[in-house]
Length: 369
Image (cartoon, rainbow, N blue to C red):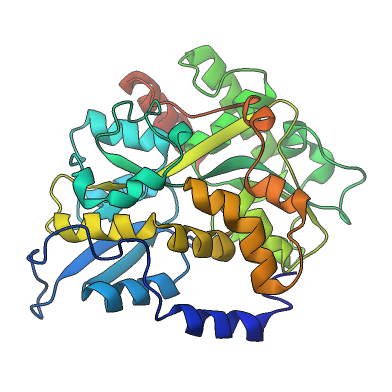
């Protein structure tokens, strides 16, 4: 499998690409942004862990002279909590959180003249419900939430969200540690919409989660620590994202991934600029660089999440084969970039009214996570 069998080739590829220009790498933004303490241009970026080919940061800095201060958050809710005391310029929230940030007037409208690579984004990822007029966002990645399980630690293939609440797996299940996903999984298992505002349905979902927790089904509620636990066989089942499953698979070939029969969440994470950003020109320059075809291909290869860049999505199987000397497994590509038939059985999260958001927070607090 890639990167396990081709370290030397990958290393030479990185060296070879380091001197290559990206699509319009420095064409966006002026050359007179606000400077950092040392007088140099800079941009402050907050995204998710394990969510970028870090060599791209170095290349952007070399190509533009802009220093990148890169930090991470473990969930949309954690990111939102950090915004009050932070000075981020670019953030990468998920769809429903973007809607909330727009509602709260926290995002800047983008100057797409400074982001010419936006033209490379596939039309199906534009004008989505979270940003219907495409004023604020450039899509970064997309994918699905599903169940990852160790095929040597379960009796039979898993097909349903029921497994996340089943006492026969007590102590061997990891539940995802954010309220929207965790309660969403329970809602799906009960046959409800991910976007319900029904207090009765949300409380029923809470009771399902709380009951499983009380019965010892969960060995923990986790985010990034899921990698180590699943790769080393410390748990049999977890709920997590398709791209991260493909990364885990490199270290544990016994792992399987499924979008459960009840459906799931399909998501888009997008790059946004905060309204109080001190380095808006640099932020747009970063966004333009990151949505170039070259950057998107390399990000897909590094993090296993599908790109919304049409060229990158089409070229990736060929890119993979040229890089590693073997064809990309079509089953793995179908997990990375699922067909529309899979997405048709999934829902995107939509921002909910304040009363529903408050109920989510209250139920999560009651759960004691």
